[in-house]
Length: 290
Image (cartoon, rainbow, N blue to C red; front, side, top):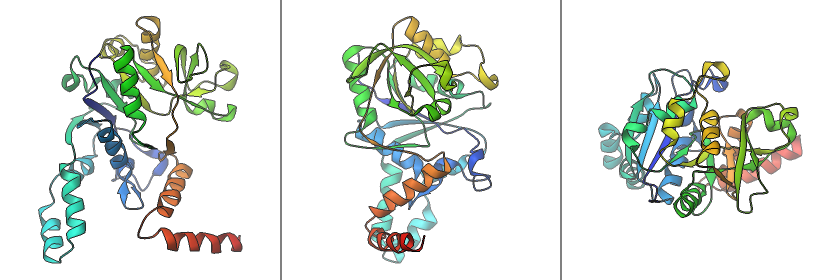
């Protein structure tokens, strides 16, 4: 199986959990200290050797396209003021990857969003990264998934173990055995109640697919909330060519959740070269006052 050269990042969601902040700003552009959450995803793809980034976005998300476009006025101001470090950073972001923007005309679910990328992906294997999930590691989850798919020829998803109370928040996979490091998937359920499955293996938003997933999405009827669920199409992979799952050791932040977003800002803020030391002092003083 050929190496993965393209990644799809769906960012067409409405971001209702962060309203009113996300009324005009996509949730994937909310900053983690001084970097949009989406940029972490693109950097993960680059670490996997993937430079073609297909962003599936909905109406009102032009801020994402603008972010990766040239800002002539800003660059001129930075250059004239001698802020060369900031200028270099802005230029590097613009040139770091080949950004391909596709409009999802209707919000019909994750499966439908991924299908929108088929004209660009074609018959190649590809990765999917959910835009509000940040994974930090070297070389990274996407790199490892790509290697698994390349060596086995079988679509592979990242999984993590979650407590029973969190099962209903995720797509859940049932496995033949503990993924150490890989196991075959036997079944998938979209956001089940804990009583509906014994499995606690959740899908945190990292996938590597063979192109036949597109045909499975096309033949998938709308499910929960009238949406075309990716997990339903993945179940068809399980029943045909097969689907593998693997664990990961990377740090993960769910920035689509308010608490997860705050945790990401605190932890990555502590590591930030400009504010980390002062933030650590502040947090220690804050703990004393609580």
